[in-house]
Amino acid sequence: MSPNMSLILDTPRLLLKPILASQVDTLHHILTDSYVRRYLCDDQILSLEKTTEMLMESLRLFAQENFGLWLIETKTEGEIIGFVGLWYFFEEEQPQLAYALLPQGTKKGYATEAATRIVNYCFQELGYGYVIASCDRPNVESQKVATRIGMRQIEERMINGNPVLFWRMEKPQTEVG
Image (cartoon, rainbow, N blue to C red):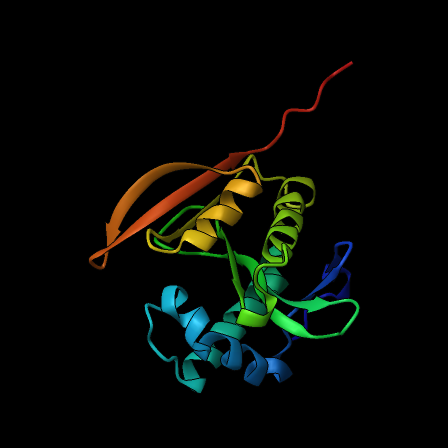
């Protein structure tokens, strides 16, 4: 089961490539990085088995719904710096925007660039009327990305004892002329 290669997305500086089954170690490396897992995994170290389950779910989602998790690769260095994608969280009816960068990929605008590309994909290719995202309240960097791409905070919920902020962006209205 391999994602359709037409699902490789690009931005001026990045390639977003669906994560392949053969890249489970790469995904595991990202998810177990102390910087990434601090907020994304509630600071738990996921087992390779859990990472494999997550990757298999991403492949299933790509096959059935044309989304999942994409690795973020820099065009100039060919370095994998994190992932971005759409994922079902918290019983939401629509998948949420998700992004995670390794420390060497931060503070360069990459998260904003990758997240913007996925939001555009949601509106233009998947036909979504809105996009949502969530992050732990202490995750200020993730909040900055959500704000920069045009999302607005809509609510805060306590989930598993943690304050989680929810963000939303409506599909831009096109003018009829």
